Length: 446
Ligand code: SF4
Image (cartoon, rainbow, N blue to C red; front, top):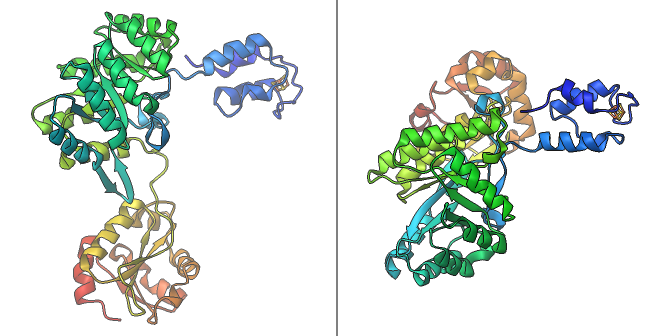
């Protein structure tokens, strides 16, 4: 459990010497408790304080990194059970499986499909993170060959899944430089798998049934010198999986039970892809570090990636686009000019509708702190002066020869004042972005 300011204060020298830049030791302790200061700021802190506070400051859930280079996936190090309490920091890694018993053509087709699982969402490209190679053949040669193909033919990080130490050894020989996750350590093979993980400097996933068994296995692996551990809580009963995911997270955060303070992985396998993705999404929300699915259909992966994008944003900060003038299509001097706010969802909705109208246009994204049109207007973040400033900053008058500005129908009430401030003719657009294509085609005239 996190130490309070008072607990920390008891460990400080209590001389109020101010060397840390704070007026008193108590003020420093309070800031340390809120993670707004570092113990290294106090030059007189005793060794005991360093030891106790250092241990308390360690994250309750260990950060584990799978892979290397730009596509490496870091999971764990979360501080809260609920996103609104702070935020979630390390997005769940999404993995898609491939089995080593496929023939060459089928393997390469599936890998190609997996590599292309990326979508554009609110202006950001999002994609899956890992390929999980399943040793279904139980043949070391085939598993090693599959590892080689994925290592050389995919930009994604790798999970090697096998309970056979020989097969794992053979596969690692072909992809250890990619720092794959060694998945398949259990009570029987734990020592040998941990030795491989130590030798190759790879993270390891352990499989068990009860939390006590997880604790025992994690301790064994740690003793072998490997501390990047992931707990595999997969199972065929969704209720049990969800319970395990929640129990481990709660134990680590609320009971400070560091022995199982590790991120978790779940493999979701259901013949019905709808069911598979809805389960995977549930586990992603609570509290899987990695979810692995069998389906590699883009329509199935899309909602999973979208849910991840939504849950791993900061709830205190609306997602924003850059405030500037955007040219949509082959704009000319007589192209229409519209404005909207810099709230991503609003901006991209407007952009999508303008694109679908096939009429090139300028969209001015006005800085309203990432709030939507009505919210910004009610909070006085969107008024004639704010729009006028955005128009000047973006030099809109140098881009078009007309002086007509289309404003969102929801803020039609702004039109009079805006016309006065800008000296432009104000055209009131539709209330909903969906009305833009028809508006631009039938109403707009330069
Ligand atoms: S430097 Fe250390 S001893 Fe001095 S006021 Fe800060 S916390 Fe207290």
